[in-house]
Length: 311
Length: 255
Image (tube, each protein chain N blue to C red):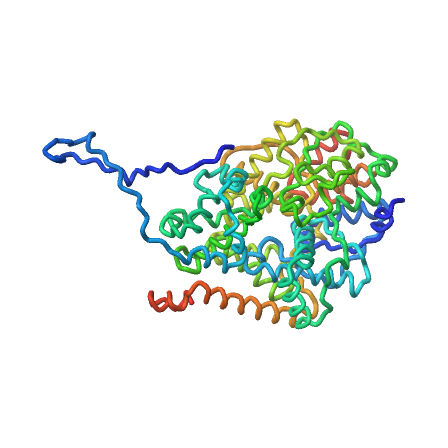
């Protein structure tokens, strides 16, 4: 077992707000997959919101503070050295806070002042490593490990892997990416492709992997978001995909919501199903669709999964 | 996608005179079409400093106008008038009246950070877009955008409870922007969402809308965050000279 694989066997789990609401199926399937793979998730005690995409527009340093509090609890109160966040927004903000607290003295000073006033230890950069659910499975189990454990291959299922914006941009907050040797790429991410391929899926050549779904303005500028989502749905369909695999609750609910909105507002129906990658992996590992929350999705994929012999 | 630029000749700057004689020569009609001169004289020398005083705008001075931001822009691809490079140019030149022509679309930046990724000078154009949108609002050039309403509703809930309960945020946003929640697509979506859910989960979600999830012992963090936000807001107001602006316009809200 590599050092990383060993380190990731037991990680602090930061679900974040969306995974307790619209992204509940992602929460459920992530936990189920972890359990099935024998990986230990310890939820961060009494966590708070990371600031999502909104707080930085009110004040970026407050966003840094909010994210630092989560990491401080994991490091100082739980003695953990890895925080795993399945939500792109949470993952991105913790990474951004880590970057700012390493490189910007002003951010360090503000976070220290606020942490003291709030009555908890100040997070210091380097205390924890923040990883995404993709890093977690990729490094703790790996493709070979997955292949050995697959009971119900996804073969015959054509998948477009959609990563969205916050998993790769801006690149400076992800110093471990673009390092060669199988590291993640910020221009053409492939970790989700790798994992689903190991589970037997057929990944299609999908050009809009890191396109924007308009998630930040999903309600405040809905027409723009619907147009952006339509681009993604159309491209997936044209690439021959049955399913778009997602790894972010905001992207996932954005795709589901604007798929319906596009039909209602613009009269355009694009029939492609949307599933979290953890739902697909879970079913490949032999979990029942209900165990990974397929019934909770707005996009109804059971008929397709039955047809493909997966459900 | 090529960089879309505005036409330098605007329809309102073209003048045709039905009857016009110049130096004894009759140039009536088509032959008298003139283009209004575009000499700019009303520079706002403070414009770049003001944008730099707002969060996100700090590095605008680094821009060397390569256009990578506009070229990579998600919103530009669906609206060619959305042009970050051009706005950065106008701000650096102090051409405020030109910038104001686009005041109603600048807030539409979706924060995808493709520009930040593409920028060779670390200008952080995404931040500049946010700073510019906030500048427009705080100077009173635009009303509060739906995006700012959403950010405010969202942040208020975090300051109050430490966490977000989505249905509460959505309801408050629709209230504050005076929209009905009963949109046909929203109803359709909720129907589809509810149809597959077991009773237990529905009950749990219903409960969350009644009793907001909270971070325990949040009050000290809440007070510290609010104090910091207020402090910064005031500092930015000073940098934007809003007190003076309020005195001039008699509008006390701007300060």
